Length: 151
Image (cartoon, rainbow, N blue to C red; front, side, top):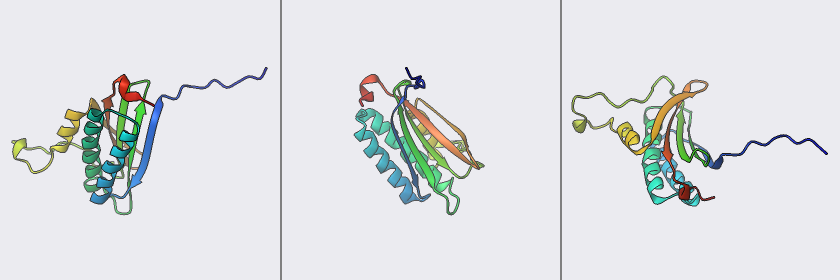
């Protein structure tokens, strides 16, 4: 009898990661790639639509506010079947610039700064974390119901 190494269950049913140029074009490509992957994974239209808006906002923020010349941003999508979540993460090189809605007395009159309010409204959870060596990751999670987790 040969001893075997215990195997931990792989909770990530689907995973996608891509480096993209820190430009508006790269942000648009991030949205298009994300939608294509999520459709291929068989997620529900509701989840795909919410994720599309989140990717668009986070990627645009990475391209506009997180840009460092010569550095790309990373888009990561991961479905965790154990937790029942879709995680959207966008990492950029500007760890010194953490996201925050633009302060204004009347947000409805502001020309920008509402994107993170949209992310907060669409996501079930979102936050930031360091992305070594000097960047940050902004992530958002969406709860995915069991039928959405088709493999």
